[in-house]
Image (cartoon, rainbow, N blue to C red; front, top):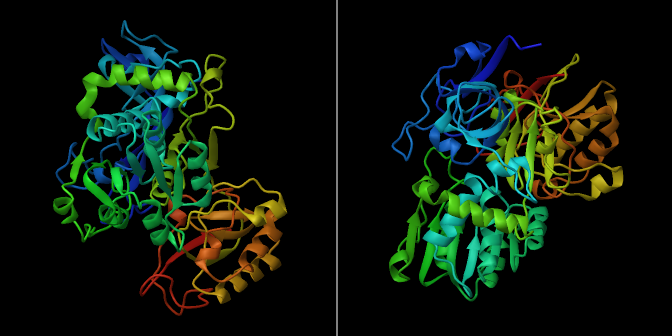
Amino acid sequence: MAQSTYQSVVLAKRPTSLIVPGETFTVKEHKALTAADLKDGEVLVDTLYLSLDPAMRGWLNDTRSYVPPVQIGEKMRGAVIAKVLASKSAKFAEGNYVTCATGWTEQAVAKEKELTLLEVPPGGQVTDALGVLGMTGLTAYFGLIDVGKVKAGDFVVVSGAAGATGSVVCQIAKLKGAKVLGLAGSDDKVEWLKELGCDGALNYKDPNFRAQFKEATKDLIDVFFDNVGGEILEMALSRAKAHSRFIMCGAISQYNDAKPSGPKNISMVIAMRIRMEGFIVFDYVKEFPAARKELVQWLSDGKLKRKETIVKGGLRAAEQALVALYNGINTGKLLVEVKAENTNAGSRLQPRSGSQAELKFGFTATTRHISCPVALVPCYSSELSKKHGHEVYPCFTVPGPSLGTKLRLATLVDLDVGKLEMFLGHGTVFSEANRSFATDFWQAGGSIGKAENLGLELLTELPPTHATSYNHTDEDPLRGGDPAVGGGTNWISADY
């Protein structure tokens, strides 16, 4: 039975710093589109996968950039994989799979020139069209090869190396004969970078990172591929070789800063005669076919590996997933599954087992109400997960401003026998089956550093209307100590 409506996500309010769930975007309902809505040369598509990219935060700012900002009330832009539902184009038929930039919407009408027929090469999978064979892979390719002029023997350092673009950069650099050091935000990501063939990999959250970075760059940097900006860029400038090349691809560490600061040692560009150059992948549109051909060959030959983090939950999960992107929840490419593809023709479209992690954002409610402090900390691997037999996904946790808070939360877990035991991070919850695991977690210690080394199973997430930030006051329940950040801390409020 054909659906009667479809949804889209539009910009409701420009964020001044962080994207605010339930405030920055809003969901709109529309009458379903049909073949009758098409003009000659147009195609009706059903969105299957949505690409989430760091650049999206910049599109929300009303400032001059390489593309106009998304306007208030306008559909959020983004690249998608879609299925053709109806066509008045000689180039595309019903049932074709395509890539296009129709944005955050379940359905769309697109002109034929705006679509690219999706073909899965040997060794590939459908989602590669938004990752290693899409804008992500092309960004890595042109940034490193054309802008960075990488050559055999170069020492290449990559920030954000476990992300969608960074992980491809590392591998291309190795294919070109360079020595590669990758920087990432967890021990698990560091291990994955080593699997990709990086000569070295460092966790920038390690307390000894500065000393480790200095030692790892003792031969100084020939090429720095920057996806992060901020403090990491400053450190790289201090270790740059004379006439080195700095490829400015992104600055994800600063996208949510109301007043981002630049590196204090920018004069190193002069002293070391560094060539620092930014670029936009769309500058290379005419060269896309040749670059894709080489990327496809490397992928088919098994020379390029990739990981994906796929968020379940449909279009409504996109806003929360975008927030999660800036907190490092993903390894490799981050995608939202807008609609599950169940047809026989689409069975080949499912990502291969082992290449992706899945995150499910949903909502379950019962009867109580609590508030608890929130610190957004990506959490990976863990001894506790091994003890309790859980498969671990990246997630947000609430380390808490003090041990007292931890113990009080643990007590709630002990006493409650409802469906949902505890709320963690951005609405994440534990089920009753995880009670002993949760108790162990909260009693494990009193520092955020320890919390970062523990793994948690991500089960569900509250919708934006159930997540609110509060000022830190004596009236806040479960206060348990001083605020974690400055004069206030974030609190999540939820019914359960």
